[in-house]
Amino acid sequence: MTENMLIVSWQLTRRCNLECQYCFTDSCPSLNADKELSTEECFSVIEKLKASFPDCMLILTGGEPLLRKDIFEICNRASENFFIVIGSNGTFLTKGIILKLKECNIRGISINIDSLNHNNEFERRILSKKLNSIKFLQEQKFPFIINTTIHKGNISELDQIAEFAYSNVAFLLNLFFLVPTGRGHSLYNLTTSDYDYVVSKVLDIKEKYNGRLTINTKCAPYLIQYTLEDPKNLKIYEGSGGCPAATNYLCITPEGEVLPCPFFPLNASGGNIKEKSFNQIINSEIFAELRERKLKGRCGKCEFSYLCSGCRARAFIISGDYLEEDTLCPYIPKGGNKLKEETIIEKGGTVYGYKKSDKINIKWTKDAEDRIKKIPLFIRSMVKKKIETRAEKIGIEIINSETLDRMREEVSELPMFKRFHKD
Ligand code: SF4
Ligand code: SF4
Image 1 (cartoon, protein in one colour):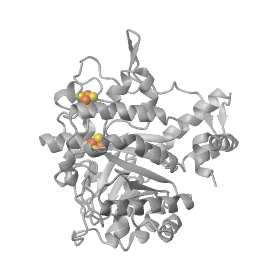
Image 2: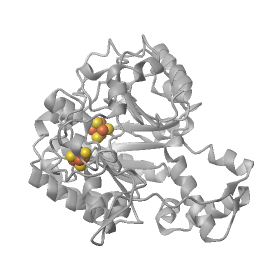
Image 3: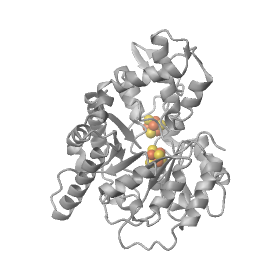
Image 4: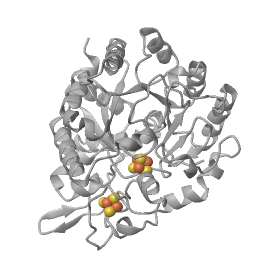
């Protein structure tokens, strides 16, 4: 059992009814699904997940996972043990399908939207299907996430997309920095100066919606370097984080190959889950070396490397070596000590590094501990810390079930959560 594996992204199929330009799996309608895992093989994967990563969150994605005829069987079986989110293109989400997913105890759906201003008729029709799906999701009070892949063609739309996510009461907005893999390779045209612009734009947007909409940046681990150099940005950094590939995150392909993250190409597989256990796979050379992170080039010398470590998939795709430097990062390391999570260094009034909140001396009763264990592992420590911080502030030394009820009520009164409850 590996306690650190927090998120497993499972691509159930490579088939898709769309052919998005930024797709990292090259999915399209005409793909042959013969080599994809059968229903029984998927059930066997679920058993192996239970044995190795019982607390992970599962993202069931594709291609378009709703194209699988056995999708509800797989959801039903997996949701007996796991917290599940579906990653969909949003074009099949009728009221009936949303209700069925609810019955299967699916906890959320992410929909990819990279533009709200298409200029060809086909893409406008697809967008309108996605908007309808969002309307149904709102009606059913089903939490949804907007996933946007940032590329040169949509940089100018980021403000509009954020406002769209906010005004449509999305649970969160994930902004993905493109990794040059699959069909997305052809869109990989951000220059370093575009990149500087995108980073400052994303920071502005995060600041603008702070406390109203959660916006996470994905696969831009070097954002930490920008934010840590300016203490006012520490809060904005929350929810982003360094590269989790192979440490807290892995991906299962439709054929059963296990990759350090969905953006690695197939030749980075740690093994096929039909033939090996997860424990064997995460002890493969690539997983072990990625966990060890003996990085090369600028990333190896960088004082931010423990917190960031660059995008390992991008390093692999560009240089053929997953330990090489991430070339999209413009930062020239200054040398000196490597910053760790608990580090605070002050130089001339500037704070470098960030500090997790001071250790809090609060006790938990058994019933409160049992309740907190029902929260998926990937957010449990964050929720626990927030509860303890609040308890300390209001002078509570022992957290019991009544404390948790009281805090749940407090949270549901916050403007950001009230939006989910409006009728
Ligand atoms: S390797 Fe890159 S794409 Fe994969 S999780 Fe890390 S930052 Fe994201
Ligand atoms: S040089 Fe590497 S480790 Fe340092 S900030 Fe850039 S990507 Fe991150």
